[in-house]
Image 1 (spheres, helix red, strand yellow):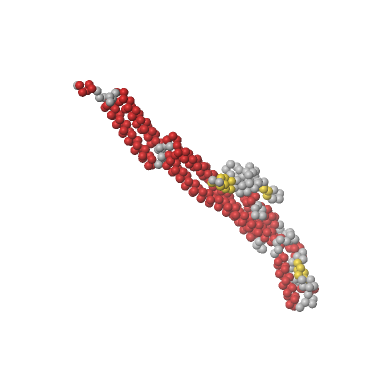
Image 2 (cartoon, one colour):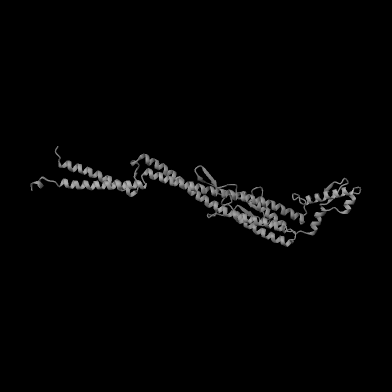
Length: 379
């Protein structure tokens, strides 16, 4: 077979161009640290990697949502902690006001303290976020949720029951706000109304006249059959006993007196009554007992909300841990499919070095072969 110059040049050129193309491709793979530069390099791997990239993007967005949710819940927790502190102080003032040795002025001073607590609670209730939106107004974030009547002290809610949510995981949303009405007026109690009524009671002077009226309107009376009816005195007077028990034996009189005393005590401690004389000790004790019960209910409600917010924050922490693990998994799977692992890079560099060596050898061989001439042998 006769080997012509055209065959030598054509074959050598094709071989070197193929080697140069291979070197260029491997150089791109090495510089970009990936073996799949275009979908055509590996259609199946590229399609799978695209699916994983989309899933990773969703996971990244959910991570951002969880970060935003965490910020909102953290701010809520801080505010609710302050509310708990203030309500605890209100409860302490209620207990202190029950001191029987306190004067009207002492109770008036406590009322002033409670007014300050009320203003603190209103401040928390009208908390805004960094954008000026009211946190406890429900969906009406642009409307101040709580306002106070300057004359009566009554507090009115202007928000709604809406609770804002964020999607924090695939198919899972989480509340990141609390309705102001649920927080401050939930569980059948209204802490603002309770404090307002308590302030009014403490500012009402207790007078001897009112106590006398209360006692007169709430007396123990014996009927002729030794029945006892409440119509105030812990112990019946001698005249009452004598009139109602003229024919009674000492034992009968003692029994009736004991029953009357017990009935009187139960009557005085019945704070569901609506007939206490305003300004009497009984009316004051009734107001303190009622306020104490309502403040306890309000505190339980706030603590319940605080517990719910804390539980959500803990769940977000768990979801973040899972999300971080998923992100790493997605990254590793994509790297494997696209040939981006350290092992892939080592293999690419090895192949590149090999192809470069082959190209250099081909170029050297081509140079030697094309330099051969019959004239060289005739010299």
